[in-house]
Structure formats: structure tokens, C-alpha cells
Image (cartoon, rainbow, N blue to C red; front, side, top):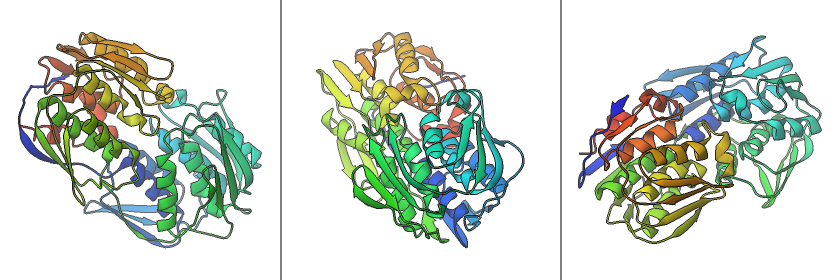
Length: 419
């Protein structure tokens, strides 16, 4: 446990690691590609380590040199390790690799930590079965996942009532190696849709075109394949958000690099919310800067369906702002690293803030939080958000601070720069 020391009115510059979402997608595409790829500035964290080990088991050769990742691809022909593939609590890897292993031959078993085994994959397994794959799970749609692979035939499939956009990305990423290609139709709302755009943009970078016939119809033609590329990984907008939050809460000025304000990462739109709530925001080619002012009072409603990872950040901000904040369209946060809606309501309540879990979000009555011991539920985003609360509220203590290793190993060092 660590106790955060408050500080205010500072001016600082911090550096963030590469995007976790970009890194993992690029790693998989590079592993499937023909030839060698070099990922510059990838995120090197607990999650990417689990994925690296999994891709190595599937036949890719991966080396890290001077912070870059060199990946020799398998040209779409993956190996069968004939052992379980363990993914920790990396939900992205579980979903993306579920389709990747369909490209192989024989039985593949994907498993992970107890929490990962509580995170659903049923919509993806159903879609794969519709495409002719023998895909099932031990526990009615929850990992471990078992794939009886004999290559991916592809064809037409529909996805509906989704709790994650990663099912879409999973099918898209492996589709260039499907015998019939892929025609994917989406029905109903799609959470975190910007991540689908991120996936198709990276596919294009690695030499594969995903055609968007309409907003809800994607086509990947057969006889395509990824080619080895040099890929510069953007800074992680989710990681940047904690330092934007610090500027807002402490009436400070914080510049974060490298951040691309024009990124496809949906979490960058937190900057617009901060502007609405009274902060000043500067944007450059590869940086963003937030200058905090007194936060605006009153009642606000924010739909975070396309940037759900920003809910912990905004919830902590809401706790310190006079007025009611309602965060909606994020019911799927119950299946993240923790049940984030319940966890946020519980921990904010500990600080004296009235916070209520709603069917699809949170209601927070802002005020003056007080110190408390914060349970992190082994959830990196809770740890980092409440750590920033401690910069403006005395007595905030963070349990299990090491859980930030999942996405931002250098978080505590960067936080110390804020003074």
C-alpha cells in the first residue's frame, strides 16, 4: 500500500508508454505476416508479455531490442503448441487469439487467471460456430476456450447484442487467411466502436484492406495476407488521461507526450469533456496539455459508450466537482478487469461521496472527498485514477499499487514528476 501526497499548482511534463490497444493488434498482425516487422515504441507491460509468450507458442519469433519489438511472422500458418495457452487477465488477447488459433490444426485451449475466466466470449464463439469452426468453452460462454481447428473457412456472419467491440476485431484480424474471406454484419449498438476503426486502419498498414460497405457491414476479401512492416506505436491516450485528470483536480498545467490529438483512440475525447467542465486544453502534433481551472458546477450527463476506459477517470473528476454527474451507456464495464461500476461506487463512497451504480452507468454527487484506503480489485485503471485523486485529497492510500504493471509499468515514476 502507498499513500499519495497532495500537491497543487504545479507545472510538469510527463511521458506515457505506447498504446496497449495498438500494440496488441500490431503484434498479432505482425506475427501472422509474411516477413519481419519492427514495432517502434510498443507497450512493454504485463499484458503484452502474456501476448508475446502466446504468439511465440504459435510460431512467431519475437525479440525486443532497445525498446522495439522485432517480429518474424508465420505467413498465416500457426503452430500448435499442444499445451494450454495462458493469458493472465488479458481479455484483449483472449478474444483476439480465439479466432487466430482457428487458422491452425488440432485442439487449442486458451485460458487465464480466475478473473479472465469470468469475462464472456460467447458471442464470438457463436459467430465462429456459424462460420463452421468447432468452438466452445468450459463454462457456458466463459473461458477456458477450446477450439478444434482445421483452418478458417470464413463466409458470412452476423454479430448482435455485443458487450465488446473486440469480437469484431477478432474476426477481422484473422479474416485475411479465411478461405472465403469474411462478410461481417453488425446489428444493434456497438460499444467502443473507435477500436474497430483502429483495427481496420492497422490492417491497412500491414497490407490488408477491410472494405466498409456501410457502417454495419464490413468485408475482407479472400487471398489477402499481412506483410512485414515498420509500425510506430502511438502513445496511449488512456494512460495520458490520468495526467490530464491531475491537471484538472490540482489546478495545474500538465503536458503529456507522445499524444496524437488526431488519434483513432476514442479515449482522446476526454479532452473535450475537460474543456466542457472548465479546463483549458492545448494540442500539438504529438502532445496535449491541460491547464486546470475551478471546475464548473451543475448537472451533466456524459455518454461514454465509445470510451468506457475513461469512466474511472471521469468518475474521480466528478467526485470533486460541485454537482451531479451521470455516466451512461457503459454497462459492459461490469466485465472488465473488475466490475468497474460496482467498484467505483464502493470506493467513491469510502471517500464520503455519494455514488450509485445504475443499470448502464453511474450517478455521482460531487463534493469534497476525504481520505480513505482504496481497494483496487487488481484493476490498473482504478489504481491510477484514485492515485490522482490523492494528489488533491489528503489521506488517499492505494492498495496493491503493483497492479498498474498491466498497462503502465512506469506510472508511479511519472506521477512523481507532478510537483
